[in-house]
Length: 210
Image (cartoon, rainbow, N blue to C red; front, side, top):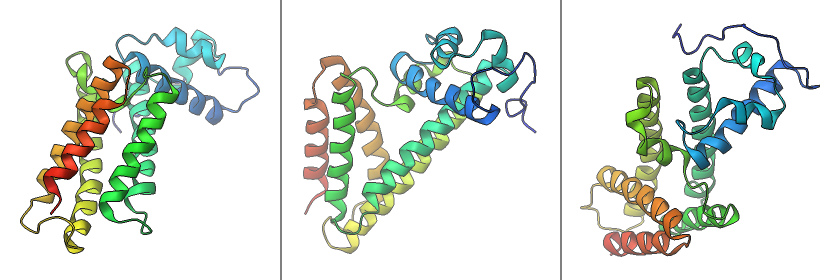
């Protein structure tokens, strides 16, 4: 068993009316919110515990370390985002390139809803990778690989439907998409408007369309 997978039962479980698994999930969800807005290094465990009404001494009942907690948070966000991608990229009622546009529009709504404070947790953590444990770096890489595979499949379908040239390397395009996507998300947070995302999507589609 990986040392980060083990849960050290130090401290007492929180008395919040929730059972242990519910409290652990609430902590992870709170971590997703804080890490997305403030990053890993700047997010104090005390803030996260306070929001969930869990005493500080109870944290190690659920997680062996902040590193283990970070892994759980990344996994939670990765699963959430993969489902969001599937919702759009696997939607057979739309053409493949329309699915990409719909995914972008969904993300834009989320950016605006949180007043450009959150963005993408994975992209945020990528920017502070020099401060993260190696286990986090590897998990971020795995997450990007999953996202890239999903985008590759969508682009390959566009090729099959003769929407984009058959000569294009869909795997390379998918990798390029996520590099550009994370940059556009970061720029939107900086400028507090959605123009960078619109610009990226428009240019990406213009580059690949027949």
